[in-house]
Amino acid sequence: MALNLGIVGLQGSGKTTLFNAITGSHAQTSAYSSGDQPNVAMVKVPDPRLDVLARMYNPRKFTPADVQFVDVPGMSGSAKEKESKEPISRQTLGFISTVDALVLVVRAFENAAVPLPEGSPGVDPLRDLETVMLEMAFSDLGIIERRLERLKGEIQKMKGAEREMREHEQAVLTRIGPSLEEGTHIRALGLNEDDDKAIRNFGFLTAKPVLVVVNLGEENLDSAAELEARVRQAVPSSEVIAIPAQLEMEIAQLAPEDAAEFRESMGVGPSRLGEVVTKSYSLLGLISFLTAGEDEVRAWTIRRGTFAQRAAGTIHSDLERGFIRAEVVHFDDLIAAGNMVEAKKRGTVRSEGKTYVVKDGDVINVLFNV
Image (cartoon, rainbow, N blue to C red; front, side):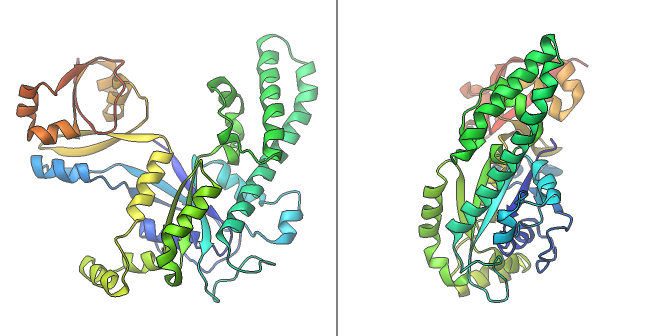
């Protein structure tokens, strides 16, 4: 499932440092050019359930779900750029518009070696968050303005269903424009499926789900919960997590035993990088169903709300075409029983048909015709 997350933020926010920490990459962190190409990497999604199933089945193969992160070149956030008609460069805008959700990094660390955006008086994560949100809204408004201007001439020349489709698009764009000007982002408007479909191809930035990462410094680790709460209050519709990206990147490069010793000596709690990945996975509207046996224990990625027959197709297209039924037991019920035989005795293994909506953590065996 080709879905990805864009790591975005102002230059100097530490977004590439976060990318390196999450992915184990070694991307250059001292480049501030917004014309650079994005860094891209796949990351395994932490799932303790797979570890439990692996101990139960001792499989030959172990396969977690994965998700792709794209480290997008930074926005300058300078006063000059904010006053321009294109607050985000076209190249950066192009990169952001193609991702499915955003991990927005805001700076909450002091470091004289990492320049602040031009004209910035100091470190302020709430100000930087507002700056990025405004820049994304301005970009969306620019797209809406240009599209509405084109539609005026196009609609007059159209007839029938094509005209109705364009008139619907025009109505949706006309409605969301004023909302953006008033500070309400598209993702908060609660558009119905038809309205969402009408504007989906524009890749509007404020329509994308957002996870805000507050990038801490060693000097404010003790203030993590407070900073997290302050930022969450500013964006109540988004997930927020505070982590020290630089420290996590350095620790990620150590051997596990050395990393544990370093954390203890620094008084740093358990890593929350896995939480960033799992929250990002959920942000995309994704869940995992599981398959387990001696050959393989595996997490399969589907969209929330997927029917059993379609879910079977993620394993193999033959399973979707020849689908008969699915034997389903939730992970919690399987573990409570101790094994599949006991789960069947307890009646927690169910037979489900094509339209069963698969739940996160379902352990599934698909029965099909060849």
